[in-house]
Length: 215
Length: 215
DNA sequence: TATAATAATGAACACCGTGTTGTTCTATTC
DNA sequence: GAATAGAACAACACGGTGTTCATTATTATA
Image 1: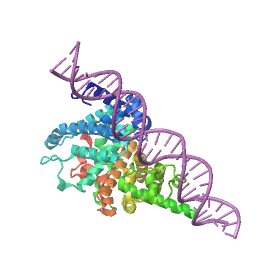
Image 2: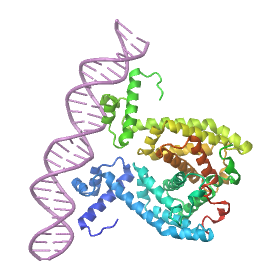
Image 3: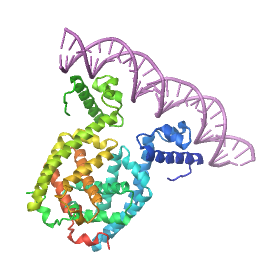
Image 4: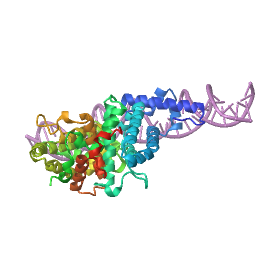
């Protein structure tokens, strides 16, 4: 979190609130938290909280915004390279590297991320994340990597599929205690997404395109 | 919901509570609801609510359980056929039919399902759903469709990937207003899962297995 | 460093939803 | 038709909320 030219007292107070908030969420979950709890843990007056945030929901939003903007930045930075590279020699190196970077970021901020994914109202957050993940794969104006005319399924469903899948992997990883390295995770993601879940499950899928409906 | 030999008054009261609950969630979301709201809408005394449920969380749980058990039943019924069929002639007809059945079920219960997915604590629900979706694909004792030794990636991550992806598609579908038919949705799901997202996005992916990491 | 500005404190307040209790009324079961 | 059990009603203490106001402490700045 960045302090522009905020009064030192404000910086301290806000930081105390944020820390207390994260601590308490880890202990009892988002739902159970009260403003009273937060201010007690933060050792500030309850009234002071309201000088900075309307309620715990608004407080949570600030965390979400921070995470989303961080992630978006990473994607934006790497996207042009990914496209240039793929169009050049069909290499998927940059997306892979981007994924590694993101997992490293998640590794650092895992507590917060976990909290956000488990909090209520995470649907809105998921939607935002989907946009970012999708942007990682498509959507770059005329230089787009993917041509919508070539899609075998509607774009929005493909988006949802891939974005949710990636998020699911991230959740699993966080839930597992982040045992795998960011590189391993990026590899897993790449294999499943590029080769397909069916293939990753040990099937050969080349022959299936025409018979997925069983007809 | 099934009424065994419950007192008629209990049946009525519970039904009134459930209806009021769903209505209010659709109007204002799960978080905003109070017991007072529910009982007012249900036209029952507030104290009566507590005779049946501890709180709104427990009320929500009953909905989740119902949905999950319905879904599980559908999968269980179709699973043996799916496996026999696939091992026989590599047909994916039964999984496709199962998916259609599930989308039809969701189509009927979309309000409730939407509510559950958007409520807090949906992580636990997602986890349960993941199990079911996974069971749709793997896990049937010695007759299992998938051999874990053949997996290219760890089983739990493949699970999360596929399950989350499917759930994401469902969410997108519900959010879109369920315009596509259950058959269309089952087809979309099958194509992406069997052929892979990359292929579904218009890429040919046979040559990528070795270069997903960009090496 | 003195001063003006601003933030934090502490106490009080009305408000609202919660969960529980005891009594009375009403519908059901058998 | 009598016994049973659920629902209604009113009252209660409790705890969190959001706001206020006067007071104290800290910071910015000139």
